[in-house]
Length: 70
Image 1: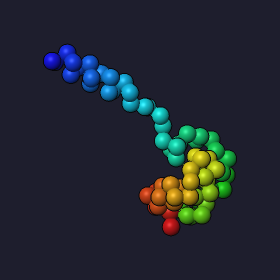
Image 2: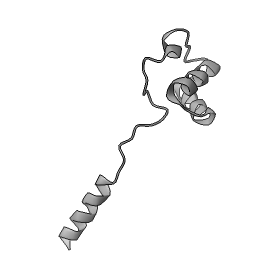
Image 3: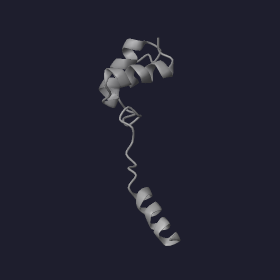
């Protein structure tokens, strides 16, 4: 019985996907962020998020709000 539980646990943990978040910092060398990007400005933050992180308006707005943009 213990062996079955160990096998099920092993199968469940190997099935987990280790893919990164879409709106994470996947491209740190994005041109918008290197030149004229103000992370406190909501419009600039959302634009940079959409262009650099391939995010949507909803996810980028939430991300920028959590970062302190207004």
